[in-house]
Amino acid sequence: MSDNGEKGYGSGTSDDGSLQQQIYPRPTGFKGIYYHPLTQMIMLGFVCFMCPGLFNALSGLGGGGQVDSTTSANSNSAVYATFAAGAFFSGSISNKLGARLTLLLGSVGYPLYIGSFLAMNIHPHAGAFVIAAGAILGICAGLLWTAQGSLMLAYPTEEQKGKYIGVFWAIFNVGAVVGASVSLGENFDSKANSVGNGTYIGFLVLTLIGVTIPLLMANPNKMIRTDGTKVTTLRHPSWKVELYGLWLTLRTDPMILLLFPMFFASNWFYTWQFNDYNDALFNIRARSLNNLVYWLSQIIGAISIGFLLDQRGISRRLRAFSGWTILLAMVFIVHTWAYFYQKNYTRASIPPDSDQKMDIFDHGYAGRIWLYIFCGILDAMWQTTVYWIMGAMSNDPSKLAHFTGFYKSIQSAGGAGAWRADGVKVPFMSMFLSTWVLLVAGLVFALPMIYIRVKEHTNFEDETLARMDDSGHISSRERTR
View 1 (cartoon, rainbow, N blue to C red):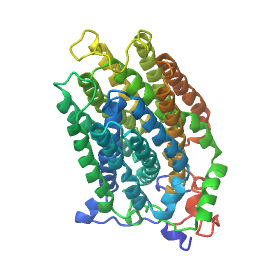
View 2 (tube, rainbow, N blue to C red; view 1 turned 120 degrees about the vertical axis):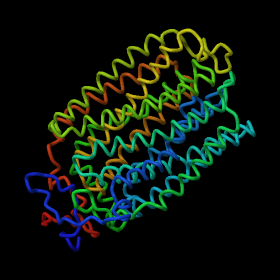
View 3 (cartoon, rainbow, N blue to C red; view 1 turned 60 degrees about the vertical axis):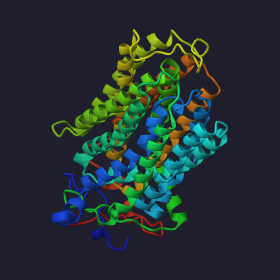
View 4 (tube, helix red, strand yellow; view 1 turned 45 degrees about the vertical axis):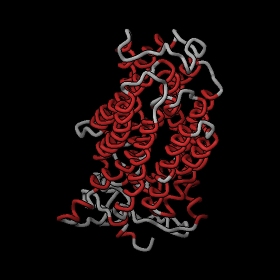
């Protein structure tokens, strides 16, 4: 890089002096508010509120709100298959095009996908269009989530990462809450097993609004953190150099591989929760209410675990191990509880068009909705902790773009496998047990990585790509103030 003194790469918070950077004055007045990292994080949250948040609300209904979940399962399999393939390289695309443009490109797939379900409601034989829209969405989602993860982890200082992740996750899940509320209002008086056109139209309008938000966000090159350090200036390397950076990320930080099982499990459980529990057991009114409380509980889960992970009175390593322990306890609480419900029903005992599905006023519903609340809390805690661990490994936006690309790629490979298994009617109990085993395995593999790799502060050596110039040469010099 041409001027090492002007391109800060860390959060500037280490006490050992290894991450020395020039301190910049923050803007004041309206610019100070607009260019504040938290303001931009809120705007980022609203992009995901309107787009993937509403996708989650639709998925959370089970079967995409349809009577037969087969088309939805196959479409989701297409989403996550292309997501997995594209997200592995989307970090390179984000670093080349810039996070804001990548975010914009990523958002456009969501209205197309939701519109495809509206088309299927109007023309029942439009299943091929739904699956094709899912494949396109997967590519777009890889771009959106990689750009999102890079910005979310690069804007806060080290002490703020848990808070910012929690704030983002809460806003993002408000999107699913709004979507679930629309669905509940539309379907509260219905005892059918599918949603009407009004639900899909409402979702479509909101996602189209979400596509416009990246156009209003600040240029990341102009962002200064609250401690006066500057977010790494975007490089514009060749594709060859950017792909070299992808390989370099793995070579210089191979411990990220131990997080891959945790990544893989992080979307696998949605299939059992949404299709094999919510869709299988409940009518559309109960499914809509379950969906609402699921996403509301995510806000609680994200903020609570984010608060723990940012406690300044506790060392960062202790916070990491505490988060891991809480996740392990939650996995066993949720799945032990769920086992006692799952053992009592199968695909054969409750067919998709059954008129015997549970309603909100039926005996036993209260316990089942509480389980769904805990499922939502566990999901938010899991995703927030994964992001926080990656943020503890580096403050370099280019490296974090690759990390989040790996995360979304491996996560989506798991999601594709789970949705495909559901599409070919793997038994509910098998889906459930695989979910439980994969979550535990993810935590077991992550433990040595946390022990070895999470330190009290991010070191100079962790910022490899921030020291790489456009030709691929890596500087050995530290920045000075």
